[in-house]
Image (cartoon, rainbow, N blue to C red; front, side, top):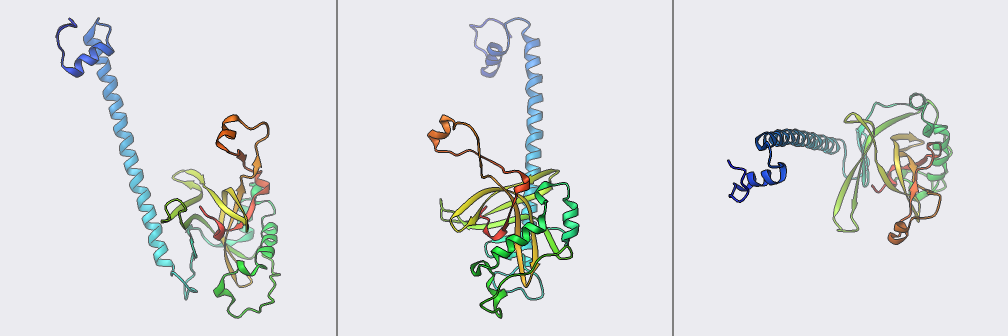
Length: 270
């Protein structure tokens, strides 16, 4: 080796010499650079191996969820001998043990989103189920036309909490059928994960919200997929930023958990 720059070096070595040394103590500087390079390469290899392992694990979880979906559900009609966890375009998976409302409320007593949980749910159901279009057809084969929902959930009634919401829909961009897997879990790969959804609040109003809880409950002959969500419908105070005006964006923030909203999971769009 020579330190005379006019002589031709091997390409990579020449670049190292020119970019990584000051032409003094060349061997020590190149050795230090090699050590840094190989350490970074080892770290990168470990990261890529971890990513591949997590990707394989995620595929296994999704495959298991789809297998459970295929085993537990029928495409149409009322389930016979086994409860279905599919309502038209949605499916509820990662189900937990069925418990009473009293136990469920006790488990979430420190979370303000569940304040007066059953009271708010009863109010929502009285409004929602008295609209005929919101009812499930096969549950109403022998129901009078003048039916009015007047029941009320009690602490002894049962519910099943779920941590996975699968939504199937047709994309308005590609017009292809697709699906979203939405998580609502306090422990998803050792981290909490509460995904964001777009749901239909009223016939002409759609709202972005964060999932707080997903569950299934039964009342007066109905078996309903329900969700407790925290809406993004509070505007950011102050003057809009120029970039937001240029891009026609509206900045929103979450409401306080105390004002979380009840919604039927069927209205979620992913």
